Image 1 (cartoon, helix red, strand yellow):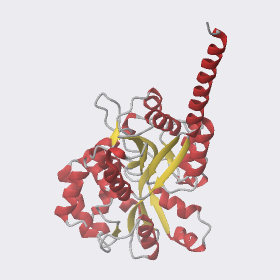
Image 2: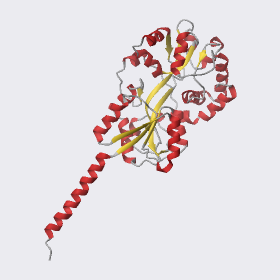
Image 3: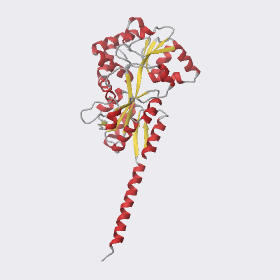
Image 4: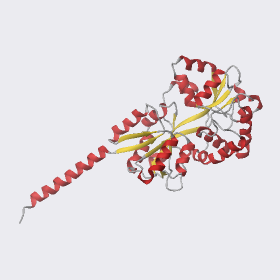
Length: 349
């Protein structure tokens, strides 16, 4: 009869080897993050996650259209674990194309406000907002009175004829803002507003938000709308040309006596065919932590989505406090089809 002890020892050695192999695999696990964010500060954000979990991050960065096209092409074989977008309209587009999967997480439900999550049909939201940015009104201090541009609606008033500049109405930032107006005011009133905007244009819509601010500073435009972080970037800049721009413009938090300023988000969800679902959820939960919220928001001059987390950003602090609208980000995304139809009917290119 063969000795029992050596057999047990051999079995124990095999189990130990398997456990060691499993542990090594966990340490070598890599999450593929398809990201429309392109900020150097994200390096520290992702590095800290790897430090805490041993899970490495492989970033695939491109703009939203390129990422969506890549995901469509890859189909079920996509290695994407996380999809990170920077606008409600883009998150909605990703969702309706079936590229996310629902997530149930007590951590995310407790920390991310309900209005900053995707719609939950009982399976859990498909995406979560992790930072917020405001759509502000920037005006030329020499040619425009702040009381004449105190609301989004006032930009369509005759007093601002020939003064208004925006980027393309079909850009996701504008579609989200108009989607918010539809949610608050209804489609007929929003269409009337769009007609007034077209009548008040200083020039046809073109360029990005920074171009709108530059146009206001140069006098080509009297007033424009911009995401708050573009304005904050100029204020934080040491470049002489940016300081010159900052000296000529000012801004208002729109609709402070009514609905509040329109907020948008940067958000993320787990990819439909994520190879590493559990680790992907862990990554989303990490983004909702206090430490990650500071990295995530401050890297682009934004505000944390989690209540009670403070970002020590002098420029944002100097911009002051504001009343934000209480509109579901998911509803804003769903309204973009109606928003685009309004733009088409009114000639808001």
